[in-house]
Image (tube, rainbow, N blue to C red; front, top):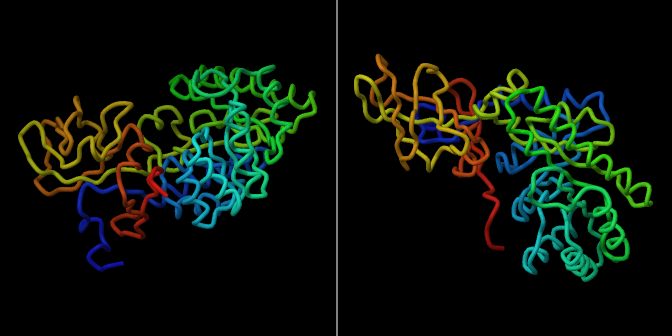
Length: 362
């Protein structure tokens, strides 16, 4: 690493920062949760999009592989030596199905499905390459997004799939994302549990109809404790736990800590406020304006500028050029806005990891 980048004080700002001791603790805590359980972790790559960090997550144990959101993310993982990947989305269109099938020649990659014609297209691509591709039927347990209805609809689709050469039904995927935003922990657990029970019921129905269902992949950072304690759940697609943001921190409280910030510099100073050189092009803000890590009394009432953020802080002692750590409300989007992730401890830069953005041409 060039000597001029040995310290965070020499960084160009805004810069995406990962406090490595904190991230490592988060990784270890998730691994400890599944240590004495049958359920395993399948961390979600979309959170950070950095293959070196994915390797760190897998290295501690308790993981069966990684989750990806796109074909390009899956390719990046496989190219990086990670050979068990679930694409937790539907892959459609001839180009993407072809890319996915080519990837399945090299690694154990699965995909979520909810439509028979889509599965037929995947099966044709698999047969053309002399391979078998594993799929998970996605069940809509309350998100109102993708997935078939729980119960009979999933069993019917499984029956159709069973006639296709080149396809292997490995189980189900379900996502209780509609529960993750509930702030009250008891209510969140109640909604998440009731939702996942629909997927567990569907799993039992599939097994009663003599269909393979060895995988039930679901979960999130906000619901992993309740979901991961239910009998029948085999994988937890936790994502944000390793980086965190202030929005998730308010939900999981002492379970995981905030490791991700955006480092910015003060560029203008007034008596009651100052301005930093990071705006919405550097900080994900879907769930609210960012906050400053080290100044709880500072307020950011509005957040609309591309390259600036105005921080209201009467009586502050900051000067032009000072560094501040900004905590986003959405870590996943923030990671997607930056090519480089600076991994640091204290003031010392340890590594710089570049992103796989998740989209792109072959």
